[in-house]
Length: 186
Image 1: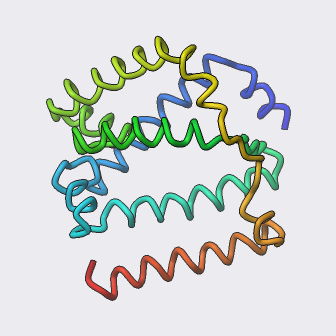
Image 2: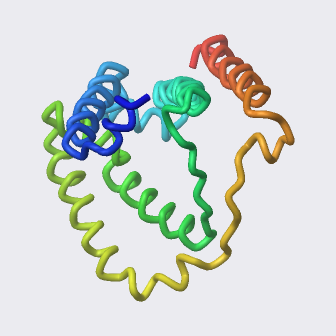
Protein backbone atom coordinates (compact mmCIF):
# COMPACT_ATOMS: atom_id res chain seq x y z
CA UNK A 1 0.00 0.00 0.00
CA UNK A 2 2.91 2.35 0.69
CA UNK A 3 4.19 1.82 -2.87
CA UNK A 4 0.76 2.74 -4.22
CA UNK A 5 0.67 5.93 -2.15
CA UNK A 6 4.18 6.81 -3.35
CA UNK A 7 3.03 6.29 -6.94
CA UNK A 8 -0.01 8.52 -6.41
CA UNK A 9 2.19 11.40 -5.29
CA UNK A 10 4.89 11.02 -7.97
CA UNK A 11 3.83 13.34 -10.82
CA UNK A 12 6.51 12.11 -13.24
CA UNK A 13 5.46 8.48 -12.85
CA UNK A 14 1.82 9.52 -13.21
CA UNK A 15 2.65 11.24 -16.50
CA UNK A 16 4.56 8.20 -17.77
CA UNK A 17 1.69 5.90 -16.79
CA UNK A 18 -0.77 8.25 -18.51
CA UNK A 19 1.32 8.21 -21.68
CA UNK A 20 1.72 4.41 -21.63
CA UNK A 21 -1.98 3.76 -21.03
CA UNK A 22 -2.91 6.39 -23.64
CA UNK A 23 -0.73 4.67 -26.23
CA UNK A 24 -2.20 1.29 -25.27
CA UNK A 25 -5.72 2.73 -25.60
CA UNK A 26 -4.87 4.05 -29.07
CA UNK A 27 -3.45 0.69 -30.13
CA UNK A 28 -6.61 -1.09 -28.94
CA UNK A 29 -8.81 1.40 -30.81
CA UNK A 30 -6.74 0.92 -33.95
CA UNK A 31 -6.72 -2.89 -33.68
CA UNK A 32 -10.51 -2.88 -33.16
CA UNK A 33 -10.88 -0.83 -36.36
CA UNK A 34 -12.71 2.09 -34.76
CA UNK A 35 -10.14 4.64 -35.90
CA UNK A 36 -11.27 4.12 -39.51
CA UNK A 37 -13.65 6.71 -40.89
CA UNK A 38 -15.69 4.05 -42.73
CA UNK A 39 -16.34 2.12 -39.50
CA UNK A 40 -17.46 5.24 -37.63
CA UNK A 41 -19.73 6.31 -40.50
CA UNK A 42 -21.11 2.76 -40.62
CA UNK A 43 -22.03 3.06 -36.94
CA UNK A 44 -23.69 6.44 -37.44
CA UNK A 45 -25.70 4.99 -40.35
CA UNK A 46 -26.57 1.91 -38.24
CA UNK A 47 -24.86 -0.40 -40.74
CA UNK A 48 -21.75 -1.42 -38.75
CA UNK A 49 -21.95 -1.87 -34.96
CA UNK A 50 -18.22 -2.31 -34.35
CA UNK A 51 -18.00 0.98 -32.44
CA UNK A 52 -20.91 0.04 -30.15
CA UNK A 53 -19.40 -3.41 -29.52
CA UNK A 54 -16.02 -1.91 -28.60
CA UNK A 55 -17.64 0.69 -26.33
CA UNK A 56 -19.79 -1.89 -24.55
CA UNK A 57 -16.77 -4.16 -24.07
CA UNK A 58 -14.89 -1.20 -22.59
CA UNK A 59 -17.82 -0.49 -20.25
CA UNK A 60 -17.66 -4.05 -18.93
CA UNK A 61 -13.89 -4.02 -18.41
CA UNK A 62 -13.88 -0.50 -16.95
CA UNK A 63 -16.84 -1.10 -14.63
CA UNK A 64 -15.42 -4.29 -13.17
CA UNK A 65 -11.87 -2.90 -13.04
CA UNK A 66 -12.71 0.39 -11.35
CA UNK A 67 -14.96 -1.20 -8.74
CA UNK A 68 -12.42 -3.94 -8.06
CA UNK A 69 -9.71 -1.31 -7.56
CA UNK A 70 -12.01 0.67 -5.26
CA UNK A 71 -12.82 -2.48 -3.28
CA UNK A 72 -9.07 -3.16 -2.89
CA UNK A 73 -8.43 0.45 -1.85
CA UNK A 74 -6.38 1.22 -4.95
CA UNK A 75 -8.75 3.86 -6.34
CA UNK A 76 -11.51 6.21 -5.29
CA UNK A 77 -14.69 6.59 -7.31
CA UNK A 78 -15.73 10.23 -7.23
CA UNK A 79 -19.00 10.90 -9.02
CA UNK A 80 -19.36 14.51 -10.12
CA UNK A 81 -22.54 16.48 -10.21
CA UNK A 82 -23.62 17.84 -13.57
CA UNK A 83 -26.05 20.19 -15.22
CA UNK A 84 -28.35 20.27 -18.21
CA UNK A 85 -26.57 23.37 -19.52
CA UNK A 86 -23.14 21.75 -19.58
CA UNK A 87 -24.63 18.57 -21.05
CA UNK A 88 -26.30 20.53 -23.86
CA UNK A 89 -23.18 22.58 -24.67
CA UNK A 90 -20.91 19.54 -24.47
CA UNK A 91 -23.28 17.49 -26.61
CA UNK A 92 -23.50 20.21 -29.25
CA UNK A 93 -19.71 20.63 -29.42
CA UNK A 94 -19.11 16.87 -29.50
CA UNK A 95 -21.92 16.30 -32.03
CA UNK A 96 -20.76 19.11 -34.33
CA UNK A 97 -17.21 17.77 -34.40
CA UNK A 98 -18.43 14.23 -34.92
CA UNK A 99 -20.80 15.26 -37.73
CA UNK A 100 -18.23 17.43 -39.52
CA UNK A 101 -15.25 15.11 -39.27
CA UNK A 102 -16.57 11.65 -38.46
CA UNK A 103 -14.32 11.13 -35.44
CA UNK A 104 -14.75 11.53 -31.70
CA UNK A 105 -11.83 12.79 -29.56
CA UNK A 106 -10.54 9.28 -28.79
CA UNK A 107 -10.77 7.95 -32.32
CA UNK A 108 -9.32 11.13 -33.82
CA UNK A 109 -6.19 10.70 -31.68
CA UNK A 110 -5.90 7.05 -32.74
CA UNK A 111 -6.49 7.88 -36.42
CA UNK A 112 -3.93 10.71 -36.30
CA UNK A 113 -1.49 8.29 -34.69
CA UNK A 114 -1.85 5.89 -37.60
CA UNK A 115 -1.28 8.69 -40.11
CA UNK A 116 -4.78 9.78 -41.18
CA UNK A 117 -4.24 13.35 -42.38
CA UNK A 118 -7.92 14.30 -42.03
CA UNK A 119 -7.74 13.32 -38.36
CA UNK A 120 -4.43 15.10 -37.83
CA UNK A 121 -5.31 18.36 -39.56
CA UNK A 122 -9.06 18.55 -39.03
CA UNK A 123 -9.27 16.62 -35.78
CA UNK A 124 -6.24 17.50 -33.70
CA UNK A 125 -6.13 21.10 -34.86
CA UNK A 126 -9.92 21.26 -34.43
CA UNK A 127 -9.61 20.02 -30.83
CA UNK A 128 -6.95 22.63 -30.04
CA UNK A 129 -8.84 25.44 -31.79
CA UNK A 130 -12.18 24.41 -30.26
CA UNK A 131 -10.65 24.29 -26.78
CA UNK A 132 -9.22 27.77 -27.28
CA UNK A 133 -12.59 29.15 -28.48
CA UNK A 134 -14.38 27.50 -25.54
CA UNK A 135 -11.87 29.02 -23.10
CA UNK A 136 -12.50 32.45 -24.62
CA UNK A 137 -16.28 32.05 -24.44
CA UNK A 138 -16.34 30.41 -21.01
CA UNK A 139 -16.94 33.61 -19.00
CA UNK A 140 -20.05 34.31 -21.10
CA UNK A 141 -21.23 30.68 -20.94
CA UNK A 142 -20.58 30.03 -17.24
CA UNK A 143 -24.08 30.85 -15.99
CA UNK A 144 -25.73 28.75 -18.73
CA UNK A 145 -23.35 25.84 -18.09
CA UNK A 146 -24.55 25.71 -14.46
CA UNK A 147 -28.25 25.81 -15.41
CA UNK A 148 -30.34 22.77 -14.44
CA UNK A 149 -27.86 21.19 -12.07
CA UNK A 150 -28.42 17.63 -10.96
CA UNK A 151 -26.95 15.73 -8.05
CA UNK A 152 -24.26 13.10 -7.89
CA UNK A 153 -26.05 9.84 -8.50
CA UNK A 154 -24.77 6.33 -9.20
CA UNK A 155 -26.71 3.63 -11.06
CA UNK A 156 -26.77 1.46 -7.96
CA UNK A 157 -28.47 4.30 -6.05
CA UNK A 158 -31.11 4.63 -8.76
CA UNK A 159 -31.73 0.86 -8.68
CA UNK A 160 -31.51 0.70 -4.86
CA UNK A 161 -28.98 -2.15 -5.12
CA UNK A 162 -25.48 -2.66 -3.78
CA UNK A 163 -22.55 -2.20 -6.16
CA UNK A 164 -21.91 -5.94 -6.25
CA UNK A 165 -25.54 -6.62 -7.21
CA UNK A 166 -25.59 -3.86 -9.83
CA UNK A 167 -22.43 -5.05 -11.62
CA UNK A 168 -23.78 -8.54 -12.52
CA UNK A 169 -27.05 -6.97 -13.67
CA UNK A 170 -25.23 -4.56 -16.00
CA UNK A 171 -22.90 -7.35 -17.17
CA UNK A 172 -25.89 -9.53 -18.10
CA UNK A 173 -27.60 -6.67 -19.97
CA UNK A 174 -24.48 -5.64 -21.89
CA UNK A 175 -23.51 -9.21 -22.77
CA UNK A 176 -27.11 -9.86 -23.91
CA UNK A 177 -26.90 -6.74 -26.12
CA UNK A 178 -23.58 -7.88 -27.60
CA UNK A 179 -24.88 -11.42 -28.23
CA UNK A 180 -28.07 -9.97 -29.74
CA UNK A 181 -26.04 -7.87 -32.16
CA UNK A 182 -24.01 -10.94 -33.15
CA UNK A 183 -27.16 -13.06 -33.53
CA UNK A 184 -28.66 -10.38 -35.82
CA UNK A 185 -25.43 -10.32 -37.84
CA UNK A 186 -24.69 -6.73 -36.93
